[in-house]
Image (cartoon, rainbow over all chains, first blue to last red; front, top):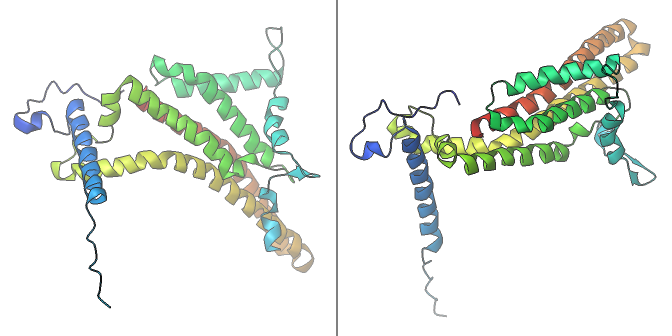
Length: 58
Length: 227
C-alpha cells in the first residue's frame, strides 16, 4: 500500500526505538500499549472492592 | 396524511405474505445470462461494458490478493444500482431504504476486511490505528479516535445509503403531493413545482447510482488497506 514505510531511514534510540509514530512496529507498539492501558484502567475500576456502607443503628 | 408519507417505506405484503423476497430477486430477473453467442444483445453488451469498466476502476489500485473480491463487489454494485433505480419508479418499494438490509451488507463485508487484515498482516493492521508522524502527546487520543472511526465505518456505510435514498424518496413524494394539490389552487405555482419535481427526479437518478458506487468504493478502500 502506498505510504507505509519500512522505517529504515529512522535511527531511533532508547524507548523511541520501540514506541514512535514513524515505523510500522513503533506504531503497532503504541497502539498495543494504548489498548493495554485502557484495558488495565477498565479492569482496575471493575475489580476495585466497593466500600461497604456502615449499617446505621436503629 | 403524516402516516401516508412513510407508507412507501413499509415492507410490502400481499394478503399477509411478505413480498420482500420478490423485491430482492427482481434485479436478478431483469438481467439476462450470457448466451452461447459471442455477442448476445445490445443490453447484455452494455451491462458487460459497465461491469468491465467498474472492475477496472475498483481493482486497478488493489494488490492481487484483493482481486478475488471482484465478483462479490461487482455483483453488489449492479444489485444496488438496479434496486435504487427500480425504486424511482412510481409505487415501487425500494429495499435499500431499509436500514436492516444495508447494515446486512455493510457489517459482514466490513468485518471481513478487518479479519483479513488481522490475519494476513496483523502488525500493519494495528499500525493503521495511528497515523504516521503523529506528535507524541497526541498518540493516545488519536489511537482512540481512529479505533472509534474504524467501528463507525459499517454504521456510516449502511446509514449513508439508507438516509440518501429515504430522504430522496420522501422529497419526491412531498413535492409531487404539493404539485398535485396546488394544481387546482395555483396552477402557475404547480407548474413551477412540477419543474422542480422533474429536476429532483434527475438528481435522484444520479444519487441512486452514486450512492451504490460510493458504498462499494468505500468497501474496496477498506479492503485495500487490509489486503
